Length: 95
Length: 257
Image (cartoon, rainbow over all chains, first blue to last red; front, side, top):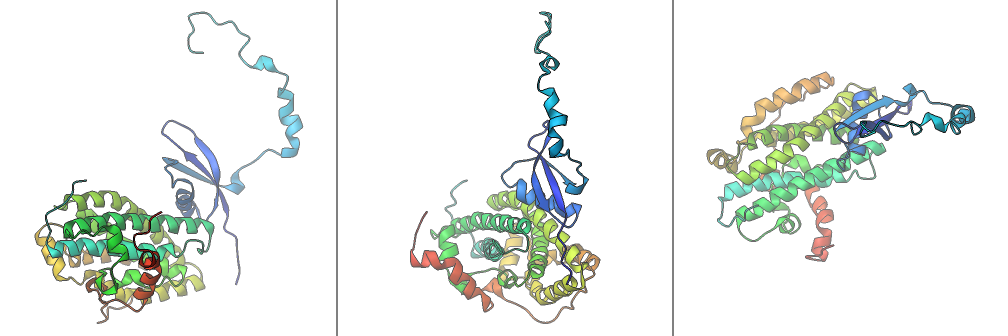
């Protein structure tokens, strides 16, 4: 008998209305409908969410961990990119 | 929750007790999958659903005990009755066998429960109507979960199709019992506690037959075979199930943790 692994799906849960979906883990499932079903059973059994997304893991394009130095390290000494150096007029509240 | 002191009719008690026993015994069966399901995801799904059923059983048995008025609580009813006093359908006590049989049974049973809970939302027994309000959401998920599996297993590989057809052939004769009324049904219907279960058969057939057909399964013919769990005449599997389920309370009566 041929044995095939079910594809992997990444699961995103939105905990409350108005918040973002957050990645919370992954499940194995034969198709999209069942992936949602098992995601519900595995990740929302303690009222963690009000909405679920599943995405086939193979459809996620990830950055290369080895490219970390050239991708992320150059931002280290660019503190001027934070908007903390600008004087705000007094009339501007809540920034 | 209000304390019910006046005794309800024995048929009313029986009607609620039968529902509590169905949930308890099927919950016990489904819980047997915990740690044994084919994949981790379904292991958790089945354990969740077993707990849904045990939760329903607790509410229903507590209510039945109050209606009865003899001082029996949920534990007394679950752990201190013997086989002939259980009123569950034989369907609920049959062994799990494989994943296919478990899914076909969950599908056939929860489809019926969705129809029953829908009607019980209007029950004149306010407590039962409240239990229906909570349980119908669980039943709707159970029927969806098992239904999706029946479709995939039936219309899947040659192996999964053969197992699912075998499961349906085995379980189908036991579904006749669901719709075979006892005197409790007529009394419950007259008192507007809940429908006589025979009145749900047409809707149930209309619900399950298209799904079984879509799953490429062939519907077994009805035979004269009747099971009688509802009136306390159980299969040979029931005693073994109770022995395991009741062991702790029988050996250490009243034990708590």
